[in-house]
Length: 370
Image (cartoon, rainbow, N blue to C red; front, side, top):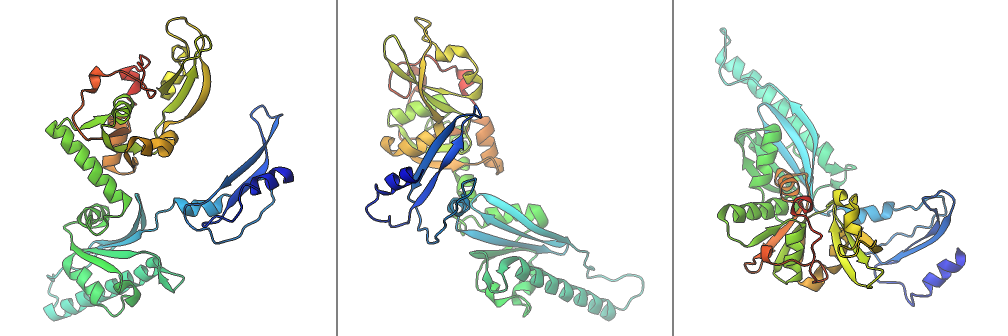
């Protein structure tokens, strides 16, 4: 194994600018008996400054996990007279940190209490509530008592209470400096959080969650207006991309479609088939329609992986969609998890070819629509 490691290192005359990551080891194959030597080298797309060397019975990929995280993380405080909610939004991941319901007294008194006394009790409880909200804000959004753990903070809810919070001396000044917006909401808690995310769309324009909402909204709008400038489903979207008509692709990051390169052992012809799990169970997709000969599988890889490597060859931009938001879920479940915006109108029903540009009769419209 040392020899394999040294051979791989000889390919690099200098250490890459962003560092070098190497995984070297022996893995057990599926039969449980055979072994395979594995050497993987990669240059990270962002600088890797830490040095890690481990010799154990597994690969340590923890340093790579940070590369998958979105740097922009925003905090939300939704506060009104019924309670306060703390949440964060990072990329398309929304996380509720805490919900704290309360029951503050109303302005009017009852049963013979003096107006002055009742007002004093009410103000005291409001003050204690604001102090508790400020303390919890520091607890959730200040890391190790030093600096904020979010890039920005959105405060939303009842006009009076959110203003009292921001003006309070109890509200941490380090958080005051990163407040991006103060929003008036008619609702609190979870519904208020959804409204706050929508209302702060311009501020959080770089957050994937908001971008996803805008893209899906434009997609649904084009469908409603019947503009003819969109496509969806594996078959039509790939056809449009191959013809250069696809400008932006919307792609479900966990799309369950594999791209097969199949070779006819008799003629030597190679064709490409895009199959979902249901199609993969049907042997007809792995036989030549004319001769009935079994096709040889040259390669098989997830379509998402293939697109990530080759999309630039077709002049297409890709925006990944998740099923974690209502709009994204509708796109993934209702429109096959793949679609996009066209550069010009295209009658896709009149064109039948696969990813090689040749005629392709393997696609079943019902099965192809994931």
